[in-house]
Amino acid sequence: MTKSSQFRIPLPTKNLFRDICNYRDVSMSKIVIQCLEQYIAEQTKDPALMRHLRNQQTTEATGLVQDNRNTWVTPESLIKEDDWRRFL
Image (cartoon, rainbow, N blue to C red; front, top):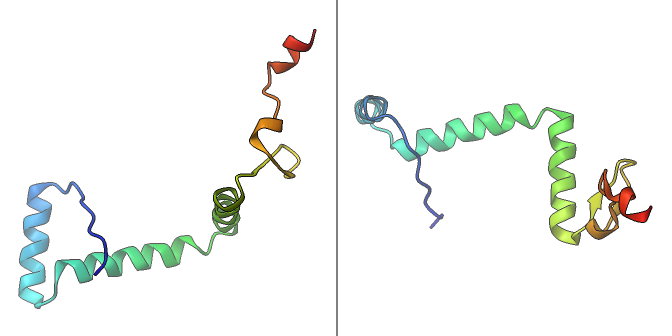
């Protein structure tokens, strides 16, 4: 069984959605899943988004982040914008 999720939906919207699903004899969950899958299919056509997701996965798997030259480095090796002042 899949893990459940909770969403805050305005009551009139939820009630109408429930009534339509009952009339069509389809579960609310099935329609929500179909909508999510359609949204994901549309959004994953964006190369910038896909690159971001791959980078996020790499960071989660390795702990590395990309610097301003897109080189994978440890987060500790990054120098913040104002850090140069402490070296004076």
